[in-house]
Each structure stands twice: as structure tokens, then as C-alpha cells.
Length: 93
Image 1 (cartoon, rainbow, N blue to C red):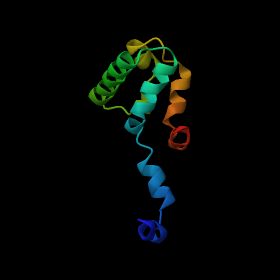
Image 2: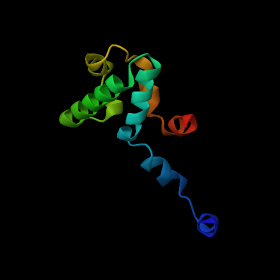
Image 3: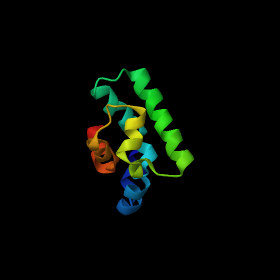
């Protein structure tokens, strides 16, 4: 692995683009709800419903209006949209 990593040429822009897909932030959405006091199981089920709704509507999670999020759980607030920054997401982990 050391040789592979040493010889690896990371394409920063491509990597950022690949990491920017909003559905990759589903775990962040679950963690967000848990931090706001929603039990993990409920948070997980809620996010699954939100993702399913977004897919049904053919809308990216980051483009869903706050009202759509709030229809699934009152704990969602304007700050939910900050979760869709891949750099912040990775930094939290």
C-alpha cells in the first residue's frame, strides 16, 4: 500500500466532485437528527423516507426545500443545508 499511495496522483477536482453527491451525506443527516435529540432508529428511518421522497420527486437532497424536510421531522432547520458541503462532512469525520 505504501508504494501505491506514494505513486498515487489525486485529481482534487474530480475527487471533490465525486464526494459532492448529496446522497453521500445521508449519514450526516442521521447524525444531525441524533444530535438534535432524535433517537437513532427514528433518525435513520426518517432519513430513509426523505431520501426516498427526494428520489420519487427526482430532486437532490440538497435541493429539497426545508418544508419537505420538516414534513418528515420537526427537528430539521435551515442549518440542515450546511451538511451538503463535502469538505465539512469529511472534516467532521
